[in-house]
Image (cartoon, rainbow, N blue to C red; front, side, top):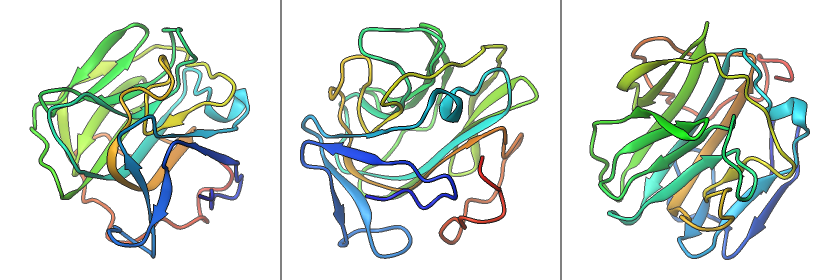
Length: 204
């Protein structure tokens, strides 16, 4: 599994995480998780994923294979540590949540369905963080003054970082993108219709 950004990082996988060519959103493969202690970690430095008080975007396409189990999409937390780290997860009632600084900050209201591609985006623009599902705002905007930090071997993609490997995603993730210093949207938008380009946003 490779990072195609201009500032490429090493992706380390655990469990049964593999590239799957059978169900993809764009291109020829997506990351497959079987939901049992599966996760991928990124070896970014603190500067890469420490968003500070600036703008940022975390987005991905997900193909959820099972419902009614808490699953993690993205987690910046170190093991056994809450604090100023972003965590995006799916609840047991199949809703999106954004958690930071030891509390849920945004609660989605759209119930997810299995076996369909859905676009998820979290972004902060000018001190306000918003969560989107398929381009539609989820929950209330969060007045976000957090000074986000980062940790070694983080973020974790597709599992809980606090209890590493738990709440593993089940299904497929595609087009995972993190932008440090760029908040993509403040209102509803049309989701991408093609794969992201690795050019045009410099090395952020």
